[in-house]
Image 1 (cartoon, rainbow, N blue to C red):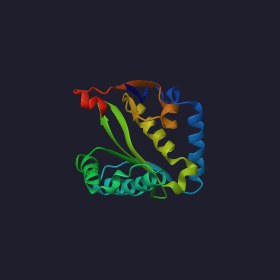
Image 2 (image 1 turned 90 degrees about the horizontal axis):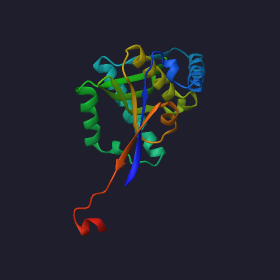
Image 3 (image 1 turned 45 degrees about the vertical axis):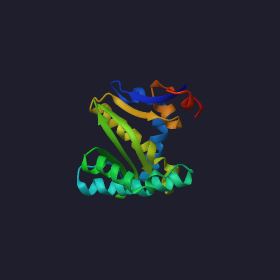
Image 4 (image 1 turned 135 degrees about the vertical axis):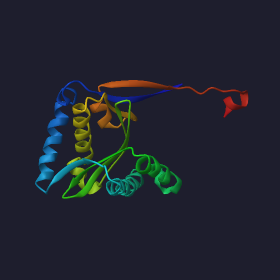
Length: 187
């Protein structure tokens, strides 16, 4: 039996009440730094062109991240890419991004279900990592969710530092092996 945790951020009336002040201050500082380099924008894709642009950025930069972190590169498999394309381009799920001078520097592909945003597939341009573009994107998503009175943001499983820092609710998910035969117990 083992346990995993799922991390969520549930809203109150004001996003600044639920996000740690240090995260807000650090993110605002990074926003100011990026604005010295040009025009910084956040948008949720609503055209096919924008969706494809975000999707292609995701594929390129997530592949680089998976290779650099020695993780399983599921994006080497065309079937997985086609599956994601079907979910996010054809089926019209959530795609958003941060741009600097109209150049995408961070993206998120997720799902909105029962007024909860599932934060599933983020990616960012590593050449901008010192500006924390992923945190800026999360910050903008949280502001949008609170303004729309949605219930919150589900970061799913994994103990990444940003999830631990931003979540205000954790759910334990238990995993238990059930053996149907003695041979299965050995395996």
